[in-house]
Image (cartoon, rainbow over all chains, first blue to last red):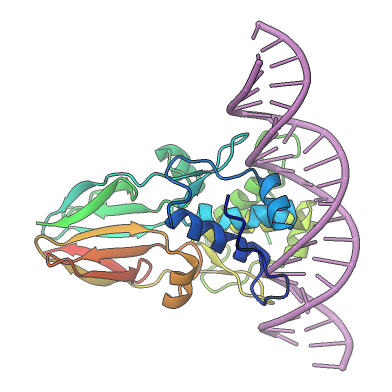
Length: 139
Length: 139
DNA sequence: ACTGATTTGTACGTATGTATC
DNA sequence: CGATACATACGTACAAATCAG
């Protein structure tokens, strides 16, 4: 499972960041594919000879990047890139992106690391869209 | 400093989430204004009678929401909402938002909890913009 | 439906390092 | 320089969700 790369205990870079780097590279290299579970936290801790807390910090980075998804009691899985539906930007419409609050996240059913698109129509009407399922288009 | 609200130790909601709720509300209510430092982690821990780790977990939520900003050795501060420059969406241009990787974050000088706008021109040229400093406009 | 094993969530503690004040 | 404050990393314990049989 690609434990070739190891944590450099003397490096300046924090161990949990090194772990995130290793796993991120493994994911982008296709070693773990969308939907695949990562090894359990305990397993990662043993494999890389670091504490479980350190593993959790590393996974938190990838979660915040929207790369993986974790549910209680299940191993973290690689998030699938979703097809994005197009939102057409009418002349005069504005759009910005920001992170949702926890309440918004629950309400929209978003996983961590997914921003929201805040679209304001020319008339001032505001709508929220999950940024992993929508993209904007100039018309 | 608004320790009126206290943590409910019997509640279902995790203590660190309750702390995040309390501080988020205080910020949006204007008790802490942009640039203001929050109390130190130790202080929050004593005030709300919870462990420092629990406080850190709560602050991490607000950081991930882009509400506060933390630098090593300094107290967390409320992030100032920046004025967003307008990016005009040409017909045929596309834009999506996602979280940056750690490397992108450093390269663009972004603080945590700030998404990036990925704009693809009609010709296929891709540009990245910090979502806290840019917004999109239909032309 | 139940049980036990696995796995993540929450919360606490401690220690040391390092940046800021 | 000392004091304050956050960063990293280890450990423990128990709760809660999921999974395998």
